[in-house]
Every structure is written in C-alpha cells, then in structure tokens.
Length: 297
Image (tube, rainbow, N blue to C red; front, top):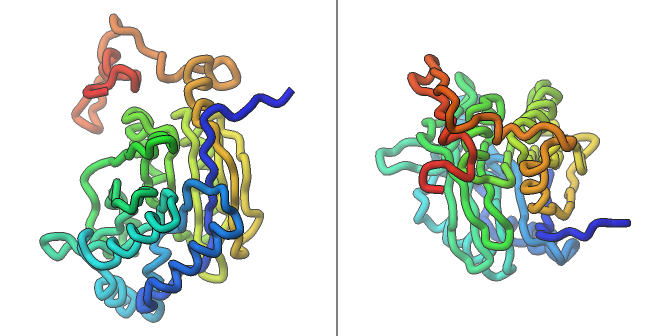
C-alpha cells in the first residue's frame, strides 16, 4: 500500500552552468520558463550558488567582476526576479547573488521570491570560503515561511561544514534546508556526507544543488529527514532533478524518531541542568532545546 503524500512540495533543482554576470537577465527568464514548461507541476525552483554571477579570468579579475555585478537588495535585479516568480506563480530560489551592502560590503546572498512576486527572504553567507572568497560574512541565520511550501532555511555552500548552521536553522523551525553550492573542487564527496549528516542529526530535508561541469562538480541531491538520499545527479552533467517532498515527514520523524528510535529534539527534560558551551560562551538550556519551545516559537 502506498502512503499518500499529505503535504506535498514539488521541487526542481537546476544543476546548471553559471551565467555570466555580464549577461542580461532575460536569458535566465527563458531558462526558468523552459524548466517550468518541462515540469509544469513544480512549486519550488532552486539554482546553484552564484548562478547569475559567473566570472572568469585571474583571481583579481574574478573579484572585480563580482564587485561589478553587486547590487543592493532593492536594485533592478531583485525587481526582475520578483516579477519572474510572480509571472510563473512559483517559489523561486535563483541561487545566491552578489549584494552590495549599505557600507559598500560585498555579500554572497541567497534570495527567495514568492508566487505573488515578492522578495520574502534574503540570507548572507555566514561562512565565506576563506581565503579564497572576497565576501563579507553575514551575521544571522534565516528561515522563511513559504505558505504551503513550509518553512525553509538557507545555508550557502561552505556553511554546510559548520554544524551550528543546520542546528540553528532546524531549531528555528526549518523543515527544509536549501544549500546552493558552487563546488569546483575535489571535496564534493565530503559535502555529500555532510548533506546526509546535517539532515539526519537535525531531522530535516536537505537540498544541495551544485553547479554543473566543467565549472562545477555537480552531484546535486535531495536528502530526507532520516538521512536517506531520495534523488541524486550521478555526475556533473547539466540536469534537472525533480522530487515531491512530504513536509509532514519531518513531523513524523521528530515525533516517532529516526528509524523509529532516535528523537534528538526530546533529548533534554526541563529539570536537567544546563550544559555549558565554553566555545560559544553560552549553554544548552534544556527548557529551550526543543524547537516547539524555542524563544518566540
């Protein structure tokens, strides 16, 4: 007997080559329209990190191109992307873009647009890949409520290597962590392990979409809240991965446990003593551990 999907989220992940930062956005509009024409039931479209900000040349030339492409969040690029999402009636996550901050900072920023054509969330990468990336770090974790699409959290590329990111996003109520990456190096194999581990230990879906070859190493994937790979690109060739997530699966796993056993969010009881965390000059407070009892939740 097949169990019906109770809270479905049809998704499409575009494992694609980055577009030059100097190309007009009209080409990206055509790209997304073609994807929706091929997969008309899609509600959430996700692209890789810096998909709209492709660069080339020496390290200095690449940084100059990134800074040249940077816009404030209220710039024309954001307006055009919002209109695209509204015209197609989809949740659009176009990867990350170069954002120019109010003090001329350069941020690597993930964006999310609603089917009504609004920018509903922006997240600045907290952990730039130093010393290779020129970005200023963000200073907060971000989750967004996407109506019937549930609550999603953002982690850009190297963020996935820091367990604090996924743990806080899950604690903030994320049911899906979207991880756009532009991995061009040999450590994609380790990132696949991290995607499964972050999903498993936080009982969330993880979507990791990478740039296609020859620029990137591909192997995009979707992991369920118990750490199982639902769908994965086997190589770096350009492709679109599709899936339908059941967001109620997050509730099931957190209620009954991974493999019916491990309920990590119920580990602490209110009467337990706090655990000091010297690294953070903070602590685990048992009364705040469970996402359902988080401050402001």
